[in-house]
Image (tube, rainbow, N blue to C red; front, side):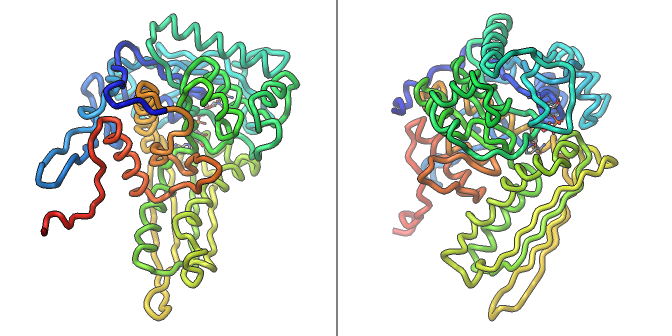
Length: 438
Ligand SMILES: NC(=O)c1ccc[n+]([C@@H]2O[C@H](COP(=O)([O-])OP(=O)(O)OC[C@H]3O[C@@H](n4cnc5c(N)ncnc54)[C@H](O)[C@@H]3O)[C@@H](O)[C@H]2O)c1
């Protein structure tokens, strides 16, 4: 059960952030933290660093920064580690990813060079477009899990970490549905021994993290930690889990816009979303099996926001299509177009066109930071199991099986803020507002 707010353990000592996958997102995150520490840039996009939270009545004017309100680990206390199938250090990987300018990278080169990947647990069946040499040998998936547990312990000792969190920033794997081997911890562990094909590498990392007492968040749309076996392990060990799929560019805007249209009872007949993307993520998603994992994640959003079963005349015939096109010239700078066909009073049609020239990893990096700090906070506050208040960060929020996920960005933020208020013993804000006019 949740401990009383007074019992949140202080954020003392070093927090190790473990990242399976040291690609564009991870290196942009690590370089960004190093740049912010050196005073070279601001942590824009990070709620933990820049966000505020209103407390009490509006007349009280209490709006502290979130980082001053809840005890979060400081940026100076973060240390980074990770795994990749390529042996390049994070400086080399960041240069190759081409997200940040060389000039900025040169200024944080020592911090980036210090992070060298551990050998990965990887099978090309799950990410068909990638082939890298930096992989662990192993007879069975259980051997791999044990090897990762050893890596985690060595890292903890080497870096003198008080606490660890793990965030999956590895590639999107092929589409998998939950199967009997995922339904209990015992079945999963048997599956590890038997090399069961439905156990993907990302699941082995999640299992190793939880077995090591490390909370886990999933930045990709893979099943990974979103299976009953992992929930069982997380509950048993009192650990926080969260996922999945960072909510960044097009889907972020979708979950801002769709609730607005719905709250005004405007109908939507079609929503066509297409992207061009040229980074390694785009290359991986060029494989139809990996794309399907992403597609399912991106498509689920509108249905839950619009609730067509409640307003079939407005949303019952919605045609929703999502495409991702691998287009190397753009690199990490994605362009996402949306065409939205809506209708209003008496059924009169209108159109909305969006063209978002975004930078994928620039949008994702602050999410990794917030997730690392909030997962660690949740852990110190005695929370466990799925952290629904972190839905704010995900395209496909994990929820208990009897619940539907909340996709509306503003409801997600209310949930997050209310958990923070709860943890600090502050009253919840209802937005009733009548008391000001009594
Ligand atoms: N950038 C965004 O806006 C965004 C949004 C949502 C989700 N994501 C997801 O985040 C993940 C990372 O994105 P990225 O742009 O950094 O991709 P990337 O291709 O640059 O980096 C992924 C890295 O993971 C490594 N990898 C793959 N399988 C691995 C394994 N089993 N063990 C260790 N390393 C492994 C790859 O070698 C690669 O270096 C992807 O799954 C992507 O779909 C990104």
